[in-house]
Every structure is written in C-alpha cells, then in structure tokens.
Length: 148
Image (cartoon, rainbow, N blue to C red; front, side, top):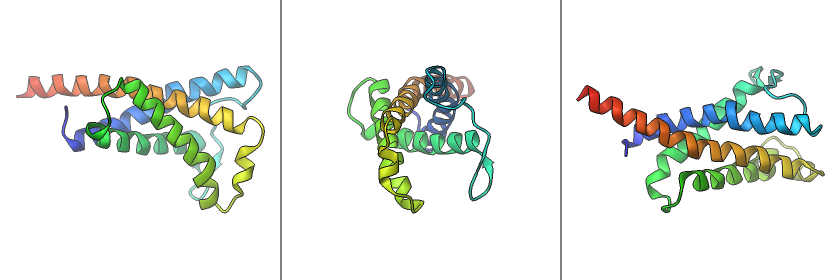
C-alpha cells in the first residue's frame, strides 16, 4: 500500500475523477428522468465565483483525500462498499451540516426528493471513489517499481 502522502494525493485524484464520471453520471440520469437540471453546472459559487463543477470537483477531491488517508484504518471490505459509506457520509454532511454552516435551514434539504437525490448522486460518487482509488494505487505501485 502506498504511503500516507501518496494515498492522500491518489484519494484526491480519485475523488475528482469520480465527480466527473460517477457523480455527474447519476446527475445526468436524474436529469433525463426530469428530476435535476443538466449536469456539469457552470454557474458561479460564492464566495470566489468558481464554476459549480469545479467546486464539486474540489470538495469531491477533499473527501477522496480523507478517504485515501484513513484507508488503512478502515475495516476489510470491498473498496466500493467502503466508498458507498463515504458517499453516505458526504450526503449526510450536505444535508445536515453544510446548510448550518451557510446559515440556511436544514429543513430545506428535507424537501421532497432532495434527500433521495443526494443519496443517489453521492452514493454513486462514493462507489466511484472506491472503484477508482485501487486502480490509481495499483498504477502508482507499478511506476515506483520501475523507478527503483
């Protein structure tokens, strides 16, 4: 298994890639079902006005980095299952913690469909992290072996 710094970096990369593929893939499926606006939103996000998709990639990377860092301490289970747990944690944080930080009522996130969409989108993202991270770690190990 790669060292802590490598797991942190690879986890960040896995989180970003998973946002672009799995998170936005589920978003697209929900869009086609008439439940969401189009994926890959580019509207500005305060306070810096970065496009929403870049904001999502950044936070997906932060969650992925944390996942990569704590990976050795997690129970032995398929990584996609652990990733699903990561997605559930991200969904719960987005529903209950983020609104409080932004000064918004938590009840807004409990509106019809918001809860379900959040779990679907973030759950798919987490599964993606769990599928992508071992691929990146395997590739990282091979590169280190060739260098040595």
